[in-house]
Amino acid sequence: MTTKSTPAMNLMIGIVSANALLCQAGCTKDELPLAPYAPGVITLSQLSIEDSVYTPRVSWSGGYVCAVGVNRGTLAILDTSLQWLIHQSGNGLHYQQRFGETPAGAENLTATYGGQPATSLVEDQVYTFWVARDDVWGILAANPGKVLRLDTAATVAARVVADTVFLAAASYSIKVNPINLWIGIRNVFPVGRLGVIDVKQTNTNNAPIISFRVTQTGVTPPDTLLADLGICSGGAYEAGSVVWEVLAVDSTVSPAQFWTRDVIASPVTAGQYIPGTYIFTPFPTTGLTRNKTYYVWIANKNWDQRNRLRSTYNYASATFETY
Image 1 (cartoon, rainbow, N blue to C red):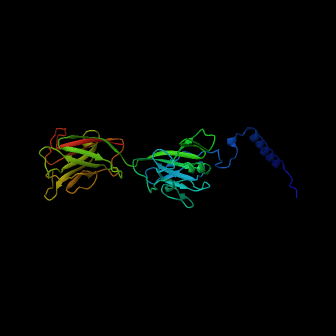
Image 2: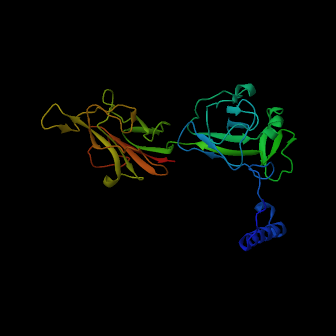
Image 3: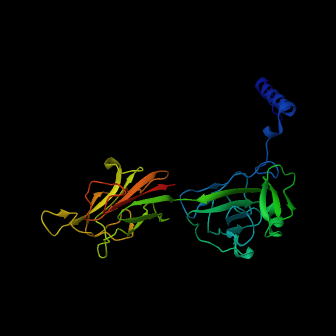
């Protein structure tokens, strides 16, 4: 049966035909429909590494890949610096792979190239994350020990030059990423008569470890303990900037007495409970913050509780920076 055309149908056909002709004449290549992730058209994006974890998820866009690797240091290379390398032929690795895990259908090739498979990354270390597609994997696998570099101006997917494999952006992406979850400590500067103070980061939280060594002439064991310990923000003591302070207390008498004995031994982790002390200022639950200067002090029961000069007896201090 033949369908009879109507004026409305004829108008619609005319519009569609005209649009098709206009697109043929004026549409650019980017405006034409494309198969997703067509080789040579869409590049792999810069990698996105999940923050604040030691087993980060690795994400990217621009197509699935056949290999995801992580090297210790600043170079991508199939060698002993590998911490994690998973492979699945046919670009079978989908977006967002978690470090240390091997998805179904994939294989872990870390040890194949001499690497040491790791279950988590390490604080204050730098790692290189990278992904590669199937069209270059054969060249990578055939050139272990050569540095894998991104070549944004490449005209071919991969080329080997001396000790380097240059890879096109359509088939390879890389990102150097430091692991830095907690504060670091630097530029510790101790002064004072009572002794020498040192401050170190823990790499597990934002509470530094404070150690001290009493060196004041005339102070001998067992009097090398402390009666007072505290931290304030800034480069000098200010009562309004104290972030933590503990003071020796004798609770066996009524009323309780302060400053009558020395009970604080080295080392101390900021915020920890110290038997025989009273917490004057609680340590912040989030710890110290980055990019600040702090002042830490120590004193024994014989301090005059007033002067804080470097020449003051029974007292010492140090400044340090966080990053």
